Length: 209
Image 1 (cartoon, one colour):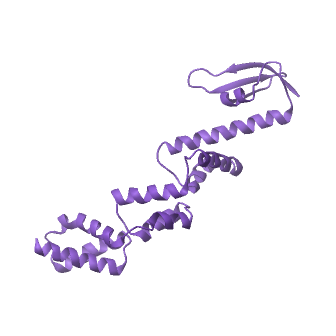
Image 2 (cartoon, rainbow, N blue to C red; image 1 turned 135 degrees about the vertical axis):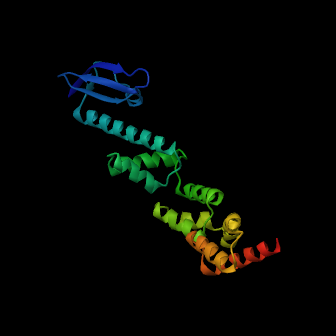
Image 3 (tube, rainbow, N blue to C red; image 1 turned 30 degrees about the horizontal axis):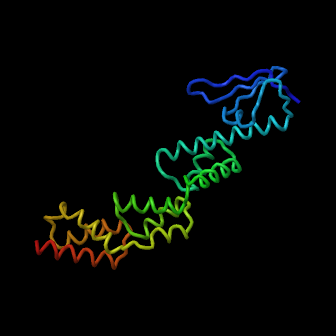
């Protein structure tokens, strides 16, 4: 059993509360936890209560780290877990943090899959298959992938990609045009049938103009 001999609340950017215990021991926890637990000088703290406070503090650190990561860009749950694991947090703490994010509407693999698709559609169109592979690599469940990509049209996306390359292919002959544009579409994950139709369509349109 330990007794609180002093409480020192953080100032400025510090959100830590220093808790001095008799015997010269001290622990530091997030101020929000100290407030929630209504800690006060003279209060007796059993060992298991001290351990619980430290565990809660670790959980808060983990959650706050997750919020900072989301400040950069949306993440899948798997990506978030990997980042937090590299920070040294254990599996249970990470799972609790992700659960909190989900409850607050800040993390959702289905929403992440939609974000990823829309980002790709806007800044780097590619095939439905390739975007699906990217999402799988990020640990997004297949159901969420299928839902997000269900309305994608590979023929339309391939045409958008090809149109964007026409300027640098304007002086190519038939063979070079087909080879270079076909290779580019292949790198974007499009299948043979879509590539052939897209290249032929763009070659004919180029000839007309």
